Image (cartoon, rainbow, N blue to C red):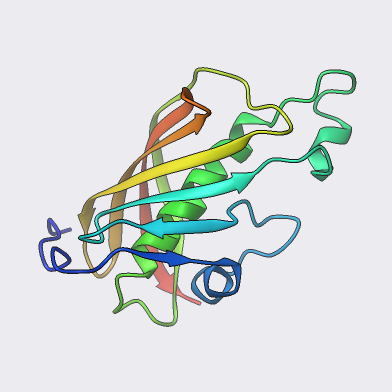
Length: 155
């Protein structure tokens, strides 16, 4: 993987749900990002997931005290990261799949009514793999963080 430098001139832009679905294959009930704001330069993005009590996993996690499962928080980070990676261009017809998750930490529960902010940053990117740092925030509080590595495979 090479450090990315070619994206320094990319403008900031917002990717809404329809375009997200053109970049990653996830659909309801497994699409966990509503919007992704690609920041100027294209190396960082902030995804948004509006967490509502209507999410199917709240029926069993946990009755009487609904908490968003940590693995779904990580999945939301991964989806925001894949949108960022795939928005760079040159990956048409490719799918980002996990190679590894390192240093995952869950620091604060995510509750219904939260607007989860998914901060992702590209650390390295090549034509076959990419590495990101991600941090999910519930309000101003870090809910989860991890380093994620993806392989790009044919769809």
